[in-house]
Length: 142
Image (cartoon, rainbow, N blue to C red; front, side, top):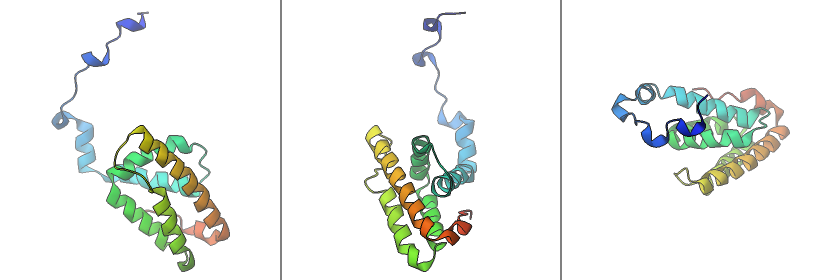
């Protein structure tokens, strides 16, 4: 077995030019793949027993920043699926989720999003406890 020091380091790796990167081509042609992931992750955070919020928050922030318009559609779908009396509260909870979040992935911003997500989840669960029928409309698929 070779010692760790003989493995190629990052400087020796060749970067793949964007025009040759198949992953980027697939994502450009099929943005619905990652949008579906964003929708699924929001469903998990909001409506399921999500014990690993920190692990969810990191990729979730990336997806929200990447697909801001789609996130807005998810937000509106969730708000509209609530009873009229709860729609304003739900809109406020989504505002709080993104409060103070910048369009970057700096550690400070990711940490702030994780804190916001944790609060968002607690508040959503509290809001939905009051209205159990809201759980029946938790699908966010378009």
